[in-house]
Amino acid sequence: MNAIKTTLAMALVAATTSTMAATAVEQKPATVVEAVKAQAVETKTATVAAAKATKDVVKNQVAVAEKATETKTLTIKETTKAKAVDAKKAVVAKAETAKEATVAKTVAAKDATVAKTMESKETVVAKTEAVKDAAVATKDVAVAKTVATKDAVVEKTTEAKDAAVEKTEAVKAEAKKDCAKKCAEKKAEAAKAEKKGFFSWFKKSA
Image (cartoon, rainbow, N blue to C red; front, side, top):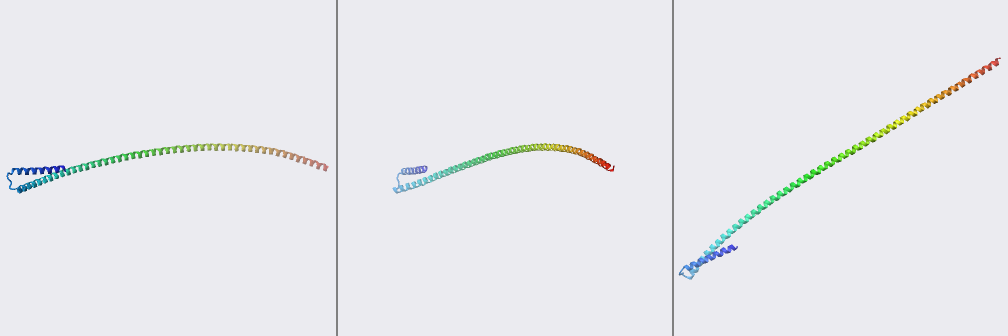
């Protein structure tokens, strides 16, 4: 704006100076009116020239300002675009890093779960084997006790049977002995009775 005012003032000064010089050169103007008309025409011409020069200057300044604004806008746009690209790259890189970290954590958690599962499985298998071995050992002890008890029962039964057989044989022998004694006594009594009867009959006959 200051440049426009300066240009306009310079144009007016130049026009006035030119008019004054022209007036000074003229030795005898026809009339004062003609001199004033001439001066007005020259002033108008100078004003038009100054206005045109001012317009050109303004137009030039507007063009320069528009160009500068366009350049500045383009620069801002490119800068914004570059920042947007950088921000997008940063977001993508951050997302990739987060994704890799998540994958690593997931893999680690999975490995830990597998390891824990295997450890638990091995523990369960070991406990099962221990319980199984204990059961087998208990069964073996029970079988051994049962066999021992059975052997003891068989042995006692056999001893009792043998004792009973011996006792039965002894009773039979004793019974045979008593029977033989009684039979002998009966035979002796029968023979004595028979003898006694014979003598009785003989006495009667005599």
